[in-house]
Image (cartoon, rainbow, N blue to C red; front, top):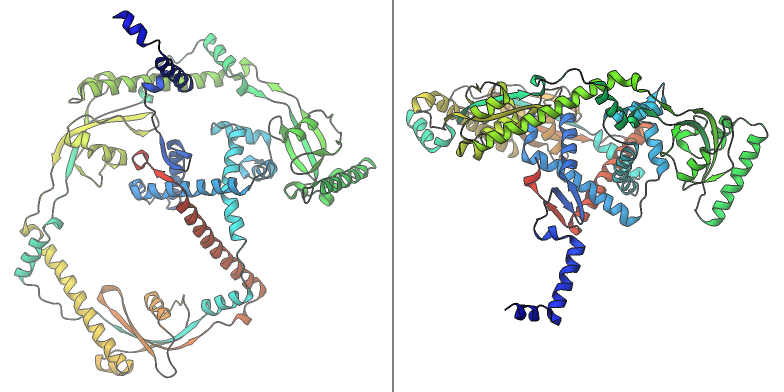
Length: 634
């Protein structure tokens, strides 16, 4: 048997198969045969993935922006709807489509443009000027390195670059501006007649109420409700050793020494001479000009004054070429190499970079500084306590979660490990309630299949920083039909509203038909003992005419001479307005000054750019392979 097996595994075919397996294992690793890949992207645009982390960060920014815009009056649960999350994801997909298109079209955001943008961000400025310490400190606060931040800014600029290029291709002619002004400033001569709500209310019979109740039974149901048993615990209640020993702090200091190091910084100004055209002749001309400018400085001309006069860097020219404090790793390699070889007060020979030739002036130097252990001991102690509390709390949360999962039919074992009492909420519906029931994550968990249907404990629910809950159903009230006697008057009031609205609409339609057959507004007003109100020269935003009437009147066609156009508009409380449009007067473009015309041109340019970009992105979507994993949009 063994000999037979040896013979079969030593032949040519066996060697080929073995060779193929060795190749596969060496390429992918044997673990790939036993472990499936966990996909984590929420969208994929062609071959580029949009990660769950990217989506979560963008949705967080959107949520904060919306809450700030509405002054805290917006229900956060509204923002958790799937269609809102999909809108945010679609915006990310559109950005990626534009970034991919940038790459294909060769659109590049240079390092200098990124640095110029960063220098203008107010959070990085002190007394109106870019400050390297403020820049570094802010980035430490958001846990990002300068390189990460620069690449994020580059991507954001790149996404907007193509939009700007597309928008700049549209031409707005003086004729377009005139046409817009004629429409914008157009006025219309109106006569209006307001017809109040019908005085006599329709009678609603009991049989109508009963029939409506039976046919709309699903609209008269009690809300499904639950109450919860829950345990709640947070990091504040975690007990830790409040006095870390010095050896622990010293070890931490050595590991995090780079945080307390301020690298050498150099105060720099520069003059940039760009090579227009980019060919050899243009580069030679730029070098010649840079050498001439340098000669003037060597002969005694002030560097800052020369920069204002000759520099082609728009970002620093007005400041006399001032670039602020620069440290190693943030500038173009050639620029940086020359800068850190200079002595204080020197001006460099022309230095070639991707932007052109630089003349660099080193104005001052800050030496490399390192804070001692004693200087940062208090900060280290606070940091240690914070991280130690987080670590202990994380371990506790893991143990509580494990216990809850191992015994999903009771909260008592998990509560014992957490060291807390089981609490109970009041009843609440899917729209939420008070206390923990106001939190969207709690509502979602309470009405989930796992908790509501299967009767299990929930997973850990994050309700704040290092603040967690586990819930389970204490009571479940199913939705039931409300008795007719309870809702009889509610149904009657609804039928009365509908009948009154129908009566008012039919009366207005009948009167409008009479107007269109030739009767006058004044004759109908006399019949109804009402008054016609004239509104000549009514603009689109007229304050003396109901906006609903104005909107309808401006949608009506121009009337023929001596033959008004008629219409009707529903107002509040079942009132209607009949109107007669007598005359249209276009706006006069000659009455708009140059500044006003430029504002119109910019507005039209923006509208055209938005439309062109939208069409371009729509075309990109059609040609791209886009995959969406909605289940990962948490």
